Image (cartoon, rainbow over all chains, first blue to last red; front, side, top):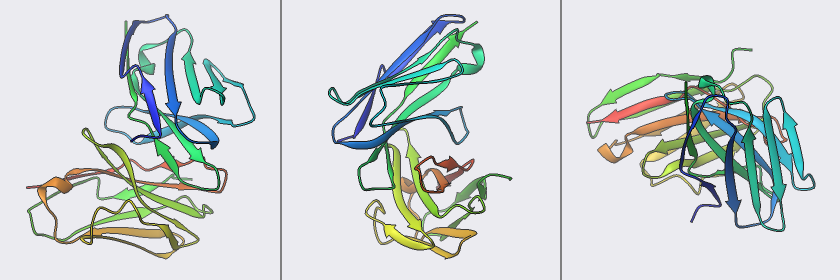
Length: 111
Length: 112
């Protein structure tokens, strides 16, 4: 089964609204990362949060991590049409360099 | 830096043919990863290298798949013989410790 699972699978909101995506995982991690993938393109790294951090900000992005619940959330504030993409969480397991990706959330921002 | 470079961007081939996908990682990166992405299975890690040495190939689906990294600036993923179920987008990514991975644009493979 997937290490990381995103929720919801798809999200459609109006431009200007906030978008929240969630990720749950199963085993202990070293860090958790969020990536964006535009249609037909490769994944782009957005933000990394380490296991000893609880919250991190980058521009309009806010990521939280709750290791006791094995969950993370990605908040995009004041969404724009250009934010339309799929968003993936990826967990870096302790002692490993590889990442395990979830199935992603498809975000659509309607103008 | 040009980022991770993959070639070809698109490949259409017939079942049974050999397919070779190529990747040039970002200069200075010491990890290289090959992924496959399909609608059904999502993004799967096939194999990764550290300093040109394969570390984990547990994701390689079967013996028809092989990957090499002859030097720090080049890697290949080969499928021989190819089958229609191999149709997918194949991504190469590289990183320099710290786990942040930089992805190439992908190769869209169609096996007829």
